[in-house]
Image (cartoon, rainbow, N blue to C red):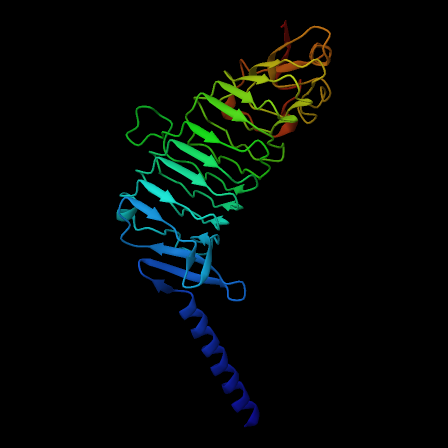
Length: 342
């Protein structure tokens, strides 16, 4: 009997705790709903904003709690939206607080009149598809230099010019010191012809894959190393040219499904390397670049003179896998990298 009573008491206590948490999960203040994330640290996440109008200002604090998050970062949570679809369609401007650390999954989905967004310095995470279908978004400015950008975060709309809801995203600005992780397809909505490259690292995903408008990559003059992640330029690198300033230490081109048209290297001491996984029999001399333009007697000239690149002219892409072992002389032809003197 005592054991039975003890079980009942424990169950009642659990229900009380659960009820308290459930109540805390949906607090309201004016037009905002929020969840308390950490009572001790006094932090909260905005989960819904009602009656938005054309301008939305996310507060720094709400009922004494510091706002560090918008929406949810958990894929198991089905309530992603912080605006109703009707309200989202009205919004032209979103002002984010400098306290913000995380933007949740699909948080700003369907804000299709939003044209610009400035992402604050403390931001550390942007959820998957956070700006999905924000097809009027033209410019994104990153004040943060260390945010993880989720898959398809800026898949703002179609890249097809004939589409009614085509993307307008032509400008993305990063701090030169940016070191955050960027996941695959993060900038699939980008339709600019030029992308400004900073200190991105090779462990990033294929964040520019299928950006069919891309023609040029400009490397920031203070960049130390240029690492083009594996498959980053798939679907667009047939026409891309890369310009590398004088004082860049090294250029490393990881495996691409299409060759980069040309790399121009201005430094005498800049090294140039391909992907050692590209090709079973050509691990040390294969690079997915058709033409290298540099100064004679430079380090890049000496290295590039030995390189060959895949000849994708007659490749049947429908039956070609992206496994790195497929880049070998059994199933693909090669050609010498063209060298052009500056």
